[in-house]
Image 1 (cartoon, rainbow, N blue to C red):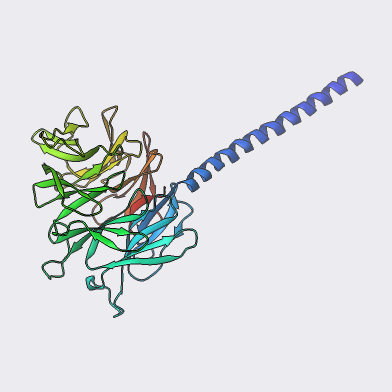
Image 2 (cartoon, rainbow, N blue to C red; image 1 turned 90 degrees about the vertical axis):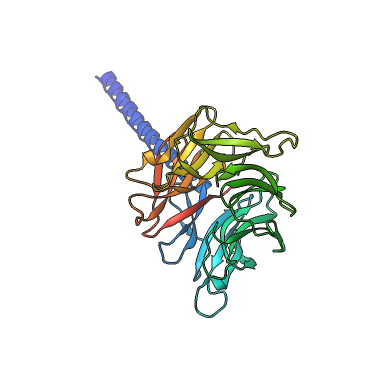
Length: 381
């Protein structure tokens, strides 16, 4: 009997040890998964504009919509956040009561500001007359590219393609500007070359012409005519992508950035067949150069965000993951190319816009941070 009791005690002790081990294992898995979610969210940071507390201000969050941080807090309108390549600084545009008369009007001008994320200090780099519609930090970190629409008619109305725009390259250190399009050529989407030595833009009026110009100033080089208004420099620096429309549909094509002057440019399609007859409004290459995100829509319908996998030749429509109609804009890739953030509206045109994050090859998550519109996401490098 004594032997049986000892065996029973050993069995009971073994069961207790096994139960404790199982609990520890489950807790460990949960903690590990929570750690993965936390570290993944904290390592990915998205700056964006939101009106959920009133005036448009710039905020930052992780890819789960958590760890929300307000980066600006002043009367006026903040827009177009863009990161320095090292992720330490954020440039943005401010439209406010810059004249001190208690009113916010276009006559106040646009302020270009930079905030240091480490110290929280901010400085005004430059002030411009007119209304900006593009701001991009140079890949080398020393300059900013600004697209500014100026009121050439004096009617107080500013709209790209109606009034004339000017491209400026601004030194981050001194604030001095080099005017690239001194002849006030209307332009639309603009793109740095990867080495920041050139800038590509589509000049109008229609039909648009794809042009490049030295980022240090000079005369534009006209590459090819009859292009769409969207374009992007490929990560390899050798090609520029644009949209071409034909009776068969719309194509995303590339053209050499430095074409043979003795030969007619020969565009190369990124797909085996034309895309549906959409108007493509925005093009963004993935950092790895294997995918292209673009915004497309009909002349009357909402704009949707798509991802073209170049190797597979497949196109994913991100709005298919979202309930209801969606008007998607401003796609931006995470530094590792695993995620794509964009802003979109579900429902009609009066619906609020939110930030969405799509996992490449997976689903789409809606990040709602409040009851106001959120838009213009920008990934921190």
